[in-house]
Length: 336
Image (cartoon, rainbow, N blue to C red; front, side, top):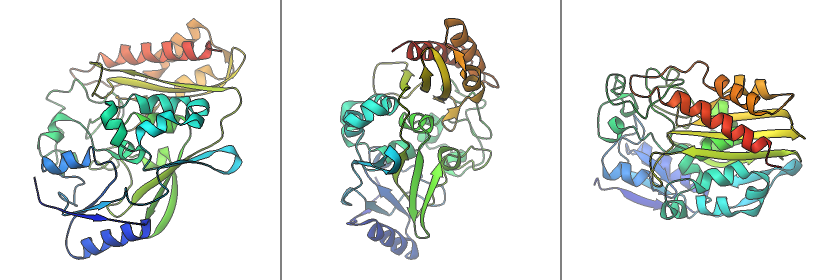
């Protein structure tokens, strides 16, 4: 494993200053929170972010106070610190009661040991788990100019939004956050900015090397969730090829605003099928203003796969998405 320096920051300002100093000295730098993904990348000498190289300096954010909790925000919403562990997030009473989809997504990540260390920001910002990228191939994600999955082993790759890279976004909590209309708060040398999910995550056609807009000198410090309506219910459904320590083949984060059996509004975001959390507005619009029946839920499932473009070995994801969306929508709509 490459030798690197570990520097503990007491404040966000200090963390940014440490990163800038390292970069001025010609060193590559990465921010570390739980470190469950980052340290594996370092150990395997995989590029963390193209252009930055394998880091020479790790700036440890765990020593920054106040970023590991859920706080009340204005107008009844909440702000969730990026350093909160996935275990703490899933166990928080406010999150479980009012933002159930996020609690369920957090508790579906990997194993208990990883959830005890892994953080919200780390899960959202982890690098792809494509076997070509993780095994040192010079692909787009590693700064190269080829996606080896197109003509190779692509069973786990994207059926939506792919090209030129066909990775899938690995996060469980990201689809839940997008479904909840979260705002992502990013801090860097230029100050603070707040981004929607649509602005935070980026498709390969816009930036083949990255999955989000974070610069090498920026940190995702928190997410803010708006207050849910009284009749809003939500859930997360994940399909895996084994029981634990794996990512979703297909997942669905579903949020429904219900009036009896009528859906006022729906937000449906898929995981495991695209390079970003993949929202399906056609399915959402189909449900809006209608009583949710088994037939309508099936129609929503069919609408959710509109535009899918599978590769040679992952067409099985199309019926899987169709079924997951239909069953999850129906179960959630009839749960009260």
